[in-house]
Length: 217
Ligand code: DX5
Ligand code: ZN
Image (cartoon, rainbow, N blue to C red; front, side):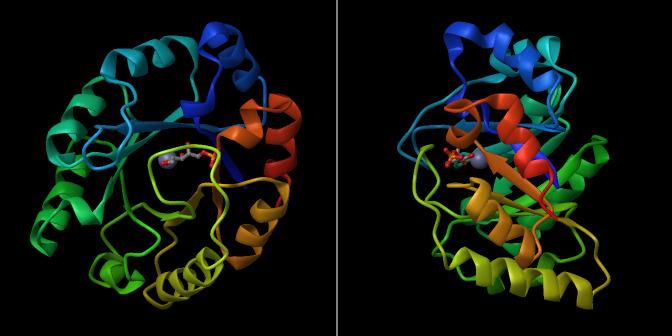
């Protein structure tokens, strides 16, 4: 399992120490939640904070854009050091725009991900099964850490993995929101191979929680 701690829940009074713990843990990715206060009712961090994390940690920078203008912010965060840009399908108004942004991210040499809110029909992903390196299933309503896992996400993970297998895609399925050892195990069984965890990791022992999620098959 690829473990992607969400630094939204990091203790910013100990940023360097917490990054050192992450760097020695089983975490391979760092999940970076960008919120613009418009697409979601929360405001988080800009590119300069990502530049700080790039200096502090070699982990793969998995940037999750919860913004109304993902095309603009994709460039901003790729220039700041993102290795992967995942954007919300709800933020764009046509399939052509979605494909164009995926192509642009790839042309910049980065990985491209697509995600959707829990209430957005899974079918909206069908035209893009071959266009992305990663599909992010939101298991909470985007905007805040510490929410409860939405059980219906498990069927969506299973269905999506079936679709990807049918088209011969080995794209990642990442799950984000309310992940702990119990929900993480359920997601792994359903077909997820990347788990985002914020509060579970940073409100507990960073090393131990990353190890627990990493062992999930
Ligand atoms: C929510 C973010 C998630 C969140 C996860 O909008 O996308 O990444 O930080 O936090 P937990 O793991 O606490 O639910
Ligand atoms: Zn996220």
